[in-house]
Image 1 (cartoon, rainbow, N blue to C red):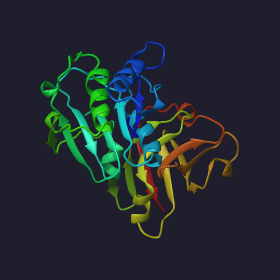
Image 2: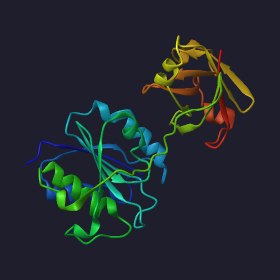
Image 3: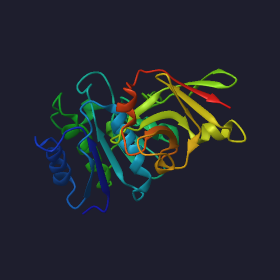
Image 4: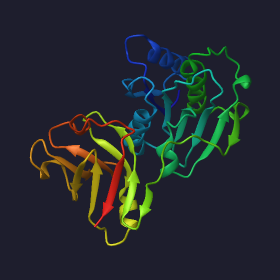
Length: 261
């Protein structure tokens, strides 16, 4: 029996049995493990959304939790599968950016999964069931998986720092758009604090200028756009009781400028 928790993040949905197949494989290999569904409703192929969901939840799980993230449009290609080990957690999934926030927040060791060392038949279209689930199950059962792994220093991340374009301006990018239409930006509260004396800022997006950082949504009128920190301390563009992305007709490639004043 295992006392470990395995938490799952996928874009599989619930109607086709794909998530259930992963669970069945894990439970067959390690009976008694606790399975937690973080989400199976990630928009198909949306790597950034999966990374954001993981970032929002993982620090609140008990130590030794194993996170399996399968949003994997490159499944079966030459992209690597990874096991990421931090001081408290394991993260298992494709090397496509789903662990970008983990790399930014944690000291970690990265290992590439060596597929030809695994003793199972592997479908080229379902590594979630045939690769990532068995690896997670073996870790949960405290079995040695060293034969399946090779240490690596190269991992894929979409998370980039703000680009300073002048003394008082930065170019930002959107990390993701959440369920409420909030636009999450690659400007962290730590970036703001490094500027000294926590200055006032403005964000210019699609010909609209948003001035100042508000404490929370209700500090503005209903339907008004605002800047605030999200629950992981990233700057976000929000709309009080509305959808900021729809209101701004925003796409992830739109230009965003931050100004200090």
